[in-house]
Length: 212
Image (cartoon, rainbow, N blue to C red; front, side, top):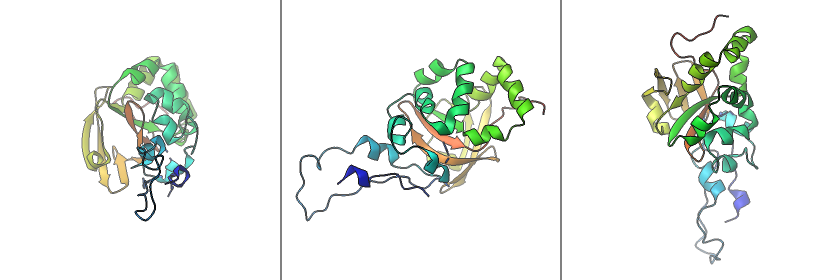
């Protein structure tokens, strides 16, 4: 089985966020003898790609540190820093000094806004949040849940975030929303310590919506 045939088939971030399987593994033919390399364990690429879904997954690099394979080997903040789809989020995370917090956490879930999600926020409002460290940290930690969330869990979920408030998820198949308005556009992305769902809108915790 050739590794190059185990590529992500795209249908972003569905990019971060419907989410159709971006990769699959092939079974070796019983008619052909297996070499030692064919009998080896599934590659990192194969493992990382399995189960990812969403139209925006096509915007994720197919090779290198920012690819699904590359992200699977790094903790979440580092993984996101290599992915051009999440560059605005990474800038915000660094400014809020949350890199070590996210990288040091275990089995978390991150609802990661794609760059296009930040574009939806009026510039004045976005600049206001970025200039307020306390507000920025509040908004960003609202996107993080301290447990691993599977796609099946998203069907009807009510999760407490690191910020303290809860967020709700609904949907089925490969069509999921968060808080009834933000859509998962590339989902089930794995990093070394987190599951990432790339979403198309920035999530605002209760009473934290900035003035326009």
